[in-house]
Amino acid sequence: MRFWEATAGRAFVGRLATGSDLVEEIERFCAEHGITTAQVTVIGAVRHASYAYYEQDDHRYRELDSATHHEIVGFVGNISMRDGRPFLHAHATFAKEDGATVGGHLLRGCEIFAGEVMIRELGGVSLVRQPDEETGLALW
Image (tube, rainbow, N blue to C red):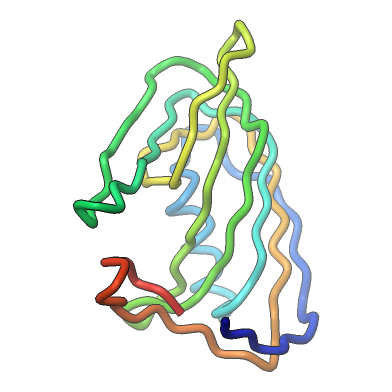
């Protein structure tokens, strides 16, 4: 088990533009504001959801999507550095009109209908994603 102590840094709240890409907008904002490590939460709705399930035995993501409107009913994520840029790693749960949910590892391609985002920067720690041979993932 590995842990690092972090300190609370700047906090940002904002509204994502309708029609924008959920992942791209958050990563762009972080890059523009020099945010390299942070907690991220989002509430709102999407016109299209893109997410994935990680096949642990095969070490690959199975990409999924849903072209119907969804409420974002759960979203937990973080920002760390990958390939020299801020990288959003998030998992989201999306609810359909009947309350059924889908979700997983968030991918580019989630089109925002309405989104309120909170980004809480963390200081005193540098988290950089590196390939992990055992899991096949890029981990801290």
